[in-house]
Amino acid sequence: MEAFNGTAVVNMTVKKLEPVLVHPAAETFKGLYFLSNIDQTFPYPIEIMFSYEVNGMGNNAADVMKESLAKNLVKFYPLAGSLTLGLDGKMHVQCTGEGVPFVEATSDCTLEELGDISYIDSKFRELIHYVDGVDSILNVPILTVQMTRFRCGGIVLGIAMNHILMDGEALLYFLKSWGKITRGIHLSVEPYLDRSILSPRQPPILDIPHPEFVKLKTKTSTPSDQESRVYQSFCFKPQKLQQLKQLAKEKGSVTNPTSFEVISALMWIMRTKAFKTEPHVTIKLLTHVGVRTKIKPPMPECYFGNCLAVSCAVCKAGDLIEKPFSFAVKIVQEAIKKVTDDYIKSTIDYYEVTRDVLQTENTAWISKWSRLPFYEIDFGRGEPVQVAPALMVWNFAVTISQRRESGNIILTLGFPESVMERFQQMMLLELEQK
Image 1 (cartoon, rainbow, N blue to C red):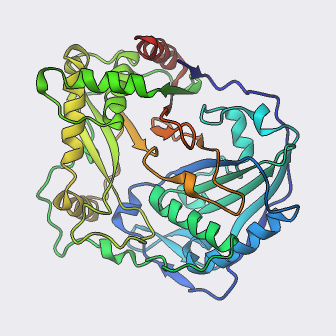
Image 2 (cartoon, rainbow, N blue to C red; image 1 turned 135 degrees about the vertical axis):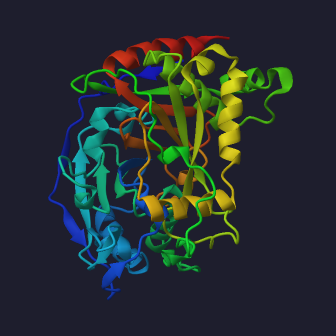
C-alpha cells in the first residue's frame, strides 16, 4: 500500500500565458442572483484536475474550448459574475457577464512523467489558475480554467471553483454540458437556476438539533499554527475495503456498510489518535450528503447549485478509540441516515435564524467524490484517464476513484506535519495488514 507525501514526481515546468476572460457568447441576465442558505454553508475553494491522454482537437484546442465555454456560459451565466455581500448579510452573485479567466499553458514533460495525479502533490497546483492571499471568499473567483498541453500531446484541464456556487453534482452537470457543446451536441435540458426552491420556511422551524453548527465546549491542545501543513493520499484497494466492511459487521451491529462509511470511520479513529485527543473530549465527524433525491418533492435533475446537507456524528474520543471498529461505523452510518427531508429543511431554517457556520473544533470533515461520474466528461478527446483534487481545504478529507475503471479509492487529506507523521504510520500499518 502506498502513501504520497507531496514530493513532486518530476521537476515539471509549466509556462503560462496571461489569463483571458471568456465572456458569455450572448447577452445574459444582469443583476443580483440569489444564493440559497445551503450555498452560504460552503464558502471555500475547490480545485480539481482532469487528465486526457490524447489531444483529438488539433493545435487550436484552446480556441475550441474557449468558444464552447462562451456558449455554455449563456446557460450558466452566474459563473461569469462575481460574489458580493447583500444588505441581508448573505452572499449573492453580481451577474455582470465579466467572464471566466481562461489560461493556456504548456509543460515540458509527458503525462507518464507527471505520474499518478490521484496522489496529491503541491507541484500539481501549477496546473490550476488560482488566486492566493485573498482576505475574503468574496475575492475568490467563481470559476477559473487552465488548459495545460503536455509534450506527449496530452492535456490536463484544471478547474478552480468557489464551492458557494455549486457542489460536485452541479460542477459535473456544467462540465458535461460544456463537453457536449464542444462536441457539437445540442443540450436537451436547460439548467435549473432558480435557487429559491431552497428558501427557508415561513416562519422558520427549528425542531431538529444541528450539532454541526454548535461549538464544542471542550477544547483540546492542537499543534502550533506555525507548523507546516502536510497533505497525503492513501490507497484503499477492494480487498481492504471488503475486509473493513466485514470487520464493521461483526456482532451484527452494522448492516450493509458502504466503502465511504468504513473509510470515514477509520480516518476519524486514526485522526483522533494522531491528534492525541484526550478521552473525555467530545469530537465530531462531518460528512457531506447529497440530498437531491432526499428532499420532497425531489429536486429537478438539472438543478444548478449546492444541494448538500452535513451529517454530524458525535462521541467521546475515548469511546471512538477504545470501542470496536463497528462502533465508529455505526455512528457514522446513523448520522448519515438522519439526513431526511425534515433535516434538510431544518438546516435551511437554522441558518436563516442563526447565520452560524460549520464548527470544526475537534472535528474531522470528509466528502465523497468517488460517487460522482467525473469520468464521463468528454470534450471530444474521449473520457479522462484520471480525475483528482489539486488542493485540499484545510481540515478536510475527500475520497475519489483512482482511475476510470479502478476499484481503488484514494483518501486525500492534510494535517500539521507532526500529526501527519503519526497518522501515516497508523494508516499504512492498517492498509498493509492482510
